[in-house]
Structure formats: C-alpha cells, structure tokens
Length: 229
Image (cartoon, rainbow, N blue to C red):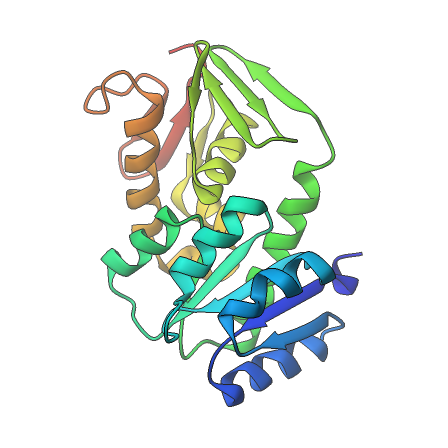
C-alpha cells in the first residue's frame, strides 16, 4: 500500500526535482513534479498526494510558505528540503507545519527511509479514532489534542511525537528510539530534533514548562510521558 502512494515533488529547479522524482519512482511510488509553487494547490486538490516534498528556496513562494498553505487545507505529510542545516531554519519549517526537514545532499537510503516512515505513521493515524489517558485526549481523525479539557494546537511533528510518547505511557523512551520512531532511522544522528520539539511541546501542554509534569526528562537516557501529571 505504501509503495503505491502518490508523492508530489515541488522544486523550481528542474534537475533536482527530476532526480528526486526518479529516485522515488524507482522505489514504486507514483510521482508528480511541479516547478511552479503557485500551481501546487490546484494539483494538490486534483491528484490528492499522500506526501509532499517542497524545496525551501523557491522564488515568490518558498517551501515554508507553501507548507503553511498546504497545512491550511490538508494534513498530508510535508517534507521541506534545503541546503541549510541551521537550527533556526529547522524550527521555522516545523513551526510552519512541516513533518520533516531534510538537508541536501542527502543519501538515497535516508530519503527513502524517511518517506516510508512518514507514510506508515500517516496510515497508522487513520486506524483508530482517539486515545484517552490521564489528562489527555488525542483525536486522530482531526489531529486534535486536549489537555485537562483545554484545546492545544500542535504542529504535525509535535503531534506525532506526543502520540508516540502517549502510546508508551510511564515508560522511559530512549533518545535514539524516539528519533527513529518519529523521524526515521537516519535521525539518530540528530538529537537536536528532540531538544527543540520537547521544548515546544512543553510550552503547549504543561502549565509551567520550566517544571514539567507530563513530559519528564530522564537524564542522559530519554523521556517519560506521565499522562496524569
């Protein structure tokens, strides 16, 4: 099912778009490439892709702005591609609603592993309606979260991270395991992802992010989710 998924590649530069398209097509994905970001939303509604790759640096509408526009109408996973690996660029992309951020040059195996992971998690989220435990209610259909009856707005990646922790309550989840589960196998070499996203999640779900009750740090090991606070 995953191998038959439709993948939309958006890049103003034809060569990188074609190279990425060939890479994905050779693994069995249905691929469509678009060079004009302005036309993406029309193509999006017509073709209904399961995953979108968007180049960070495009004229007029860059990958981050495109991600914001897609996120306004759909929950489809979006990967921002860039030559910049600065943390501020990563944070900006994720704040815009991106599900992943991949820095060029990337390896074929890494890209395909992240593609599989995103499509698999997207399919998993459709397999159940909601998860309720402690102070938390997680609605998978609408991708909504409530904490002690309070609505919390999360980015797609924050949502995925919280879901994984919530499915393993009161257990210490090691850094590497969290990175593999939420970002894919190659992300084990990027611990900064966790630091950024746990910090963002705490600001949204905790009453006092400096004294967390739900998202607990296990020093040098990982994190533990306590749904009852």
